[in-house]
Image (tube, rainbow, N blue to C red; front, side, top):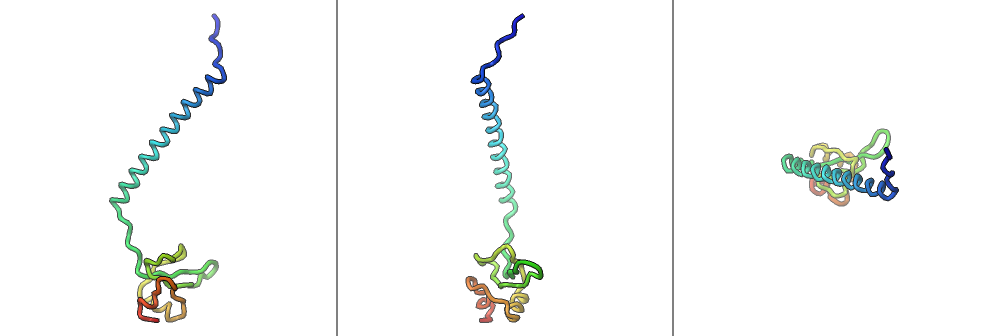
Length: 111
């Protein structure tokens, strides 16, 4: 018995292309399913409202307060945490600067 001829390099590359095309389509299907799932979860669970007041802390040991922000301030950074209105007033009274963009001192009547 004679063996069939070995596939050519071009035939092997075409086979590889078909396999990779199938893998790419499968990955795209998984991405589409995940996007649908995320969209469904976002509709079911709306984002919580922003806090009324934020305190921004510095970097490093001790992380001292740097600024007080209104909760919807566009300049609030990742180092911000929610605080109560009394804590915001206290921080401003103790000399923590107010954000120059959202002006929490004006909103709290502490200009």
